[in-house]
Each structure stands twice: as C-alpha cells, then as structure tokens.
Image 1 (cartoon, rainbow, N blue to C red):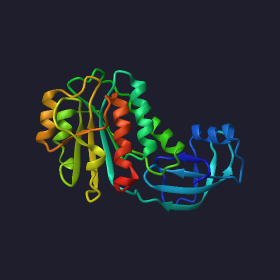
Image 2: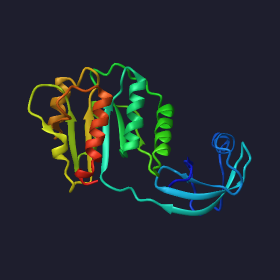
Image 3: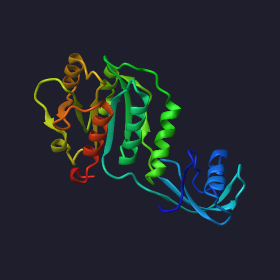
Image 4: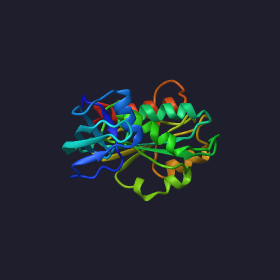
Length: 242
C-alpha cells in the first residue's frame, strides 16, 4: 500500500466513480499536487480498500475512478483497551495515536472514581484515529466509544464470554505479568487502565469480582497514557499469537 491513502467513511461497493469531499480534494490536488491519471487508495476504515485513478483533478471536487476493490480481513485477536480520560487532553490524544498505529481494535474511554476530567471531544479524537490509521497505512480504524462509567462497562455482557479480562493497577497485592498471560486460544482481550491517581480500592475489588485478572506492565510506575501504550504493545506482540 505505497500509494497515498485517504479515508472515505461511506464507501459503496461496486460504485464505479467517487467524488472526494472538499478537504480530501484540496489535499490531493493542492498539497500533494496529484494530477489526472495518478493513482491513490481509499479506505472506509472497515476493511475496504479501493485502488483508484484521478478522473478530474478539481481542487474542491476531485473525482476518482475505481480500478479495483478488495476487502482486507481483520487479523489476530480483538484487543480492547479501556482507559481513563486524562486531565491533560494532549496525553490522551498521544495514546490514541499510538494505539491506532499498533493496531488496537477498540478503545473505550472510562470514567473512574479518580478521573479528573470528563469532557470528551469525540470528533477531534476520531480525527486523530483516522490520521494515525492513514499514516500507518492500515485499512481498519479502531472503534472509539463515548466515555462510559467504570461500573457500567464491567456489567456489559459483550465483555463477559470468551474474553480475557485484565486490570492494571498500582495497589499492593499479587499480580501477574500481562505478557505471560495472553491466551492465543481466546478471540479477544480487554485491559483496564486507570487514571492518574489509579483505580480506587473499590474499583479493583469490583473488577476482580467480575473476573478481571490483576496484572503488571513492568517494574516501574507508568503514566496512564504510557501504561496504555505498553499494554497495546504486549497485547499485539507477535509472540502473543498475533
């Protein structure tokens, strides 16, 4: 996928020609200075990848002809990271970018007892995911959820069955290495990453009662966004069956 890659959320299979939106058209024609006949890729972030050729290099309404379309299956396990919102939004945005580059499937912002900031600019965060997906030349966009309460998340039925469940926290007590626990035979994993002040004792107890395994991510104490990135690396590591 060495050609320029662009995101189109509403790709329709079998459509012979597509008109790009104004922002994408400007980037193709004005920034990249692409001309009629040059080729580019389009993806909807859900596995569809189109090879196209520029039919009209209009700087506001660029049109492309579809030369080939393919569906790229999502490989490996479903990997979900439920992570607390952060007081410093730029750190959370950094995590979103890196998690997307690493191929995380799902990102769930959570509101914990000690979460300091609850404002969430969904459109901005979604745009960061799209940019990171395109930069890393992928055809799958992570599913980004609206923020959800910690307790509400743990009660959702779709994370109960056939899912390995982990919680990374800093409280005293027995923990296992995340890298040693990921099970190739299960189709999905989810890990909980807490806020700057860590999970509360009540949250840790509630999670273990819902069969979340306490894990460690290393020998040092990590910032929330760093812990999220380390967890992403460990869940997606080739040695863990991805």
